[in-house]
Length: 378
Image (tube, rainbow, N blue to C red; front, side):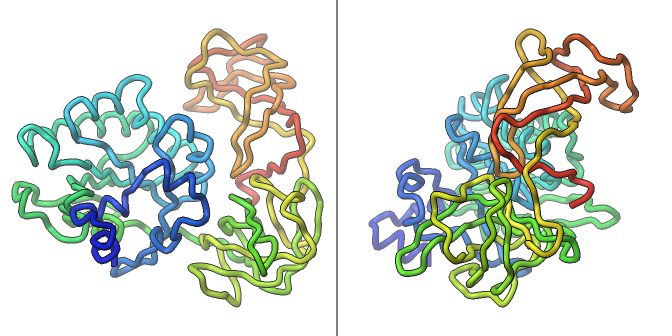
């Protein structure tokens, strides 16, 4: 299908670059982009690509997308100078890998892209050099490199995307450990099939953080997001937090198909009655009005790790907090304790200030209505 469409556009060699396309113009077209492009099947799974943009200005969108992923595919460019820019102290590669881990995405695949652009092209030495450096970095973040497949690819020419490439005969494939199992493969498709299926908590109360809200002609208001816990189906009366708005679900759709119900992990759109697109927005959370609905949070206790901050932080500081799909300023009302980030042991009660490298417990107050809940309860 991609080959056909790419040829029609006169972009023959472009066939897989489409699948990895990060063109800004595509994103600016918003929902008119052919969403089916981001859904495909492997021999084992239905895959939805949440295309987390790779540009610094889009970090907010990236956080929204990444917080709803089961696995991260980090695409690293192998071109001379390009990889170095990404992995440098302020580079995007580092930031994205760290964000993925911090947001709870515990499985990661590394695609070393643009192998056709190395010196010489398809260089084994360059691949090994990149692999060594990225492995060291992801290990520092908290990933176990033994479980992370590295695949040398070219999105432009399709090398090692779906089939083994003749241009990289030296690449014998990846061999990783998943718990007690060993898994091997050669292509990016094999790496996707090696993902462990996450457990899906259907028995808990419904929680569906909104990623976007669309107004669709002839249908009405359609919030979109991923079911995190519970089940959503037509007829359910949902409550949106923090605005406490209640309405009935008319229909639930995924991959352009109507569903009798959606379960955790499903990325869905659902149509709601008598709600205007102005009343709900990204960052709100939908729940079942009859079963422990979500509510606004006046304040909450958080464990905060300061990775990188100029100077020190004391009470009154109000950074933007990214929680599920919400991005809202939250004030450090009070720093309760400073602790050892590895053991969790308290080092100091009510410290005046904290700085880079410290971990602490903080009382936080959202500066606008926000829905925050304890991870271990939902």
